Image 1 (tube, rainbow, N blue to C red):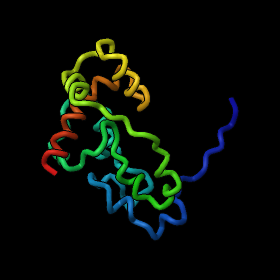
Image 2 (cartoon, rainbow, N blue to C red):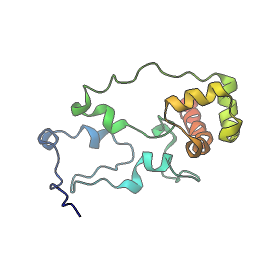
Image 3 (spheres, one colour):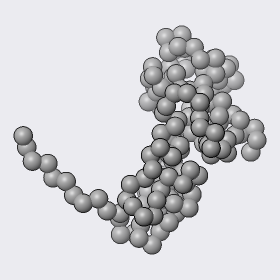
Length: 143
C-alpha cells in the first residue's frame, strides 16, 4: 500500500485575523476553538438529508435548494471564485409546482431535467427538492 502524505490540519494564515465566516454562519457551525466545523449544525448537512428540518433552523437561514454557502460567499479567500456562476436557471411557476408536488425523477419533463442536471441534481437529489423549495419559498415570503 502506498504511503499517503497527510498534513497537519491548519487554517490559512489570513484566517487568523478574519472571522467573516464565523460571523456570517447562521447556524454557528464554525468554531473558534478547533479547526473542524460542527457538521451536525451545518445547514448544508440538513439540506442534503431527508425528513423535516430540525426546529432550531430558522426559515430566514434558507438561501439555496441544496447547501448554504454563507461562509463561502463571505470568505475573502474566495473572492476570485464568486463570479464562477454562469447564467442562472429560471424555473417557471408551473415547473416549480411540479417540483413541489414531489413527482419522481422519471416523471419530470425533459426541460426541467435539463435545468436540474445543470445544477448537478440527479434522482436522489430530486427527492429533497420539494422540502427545500418549500423552505426557500417560506423564507422569501416572510423576508
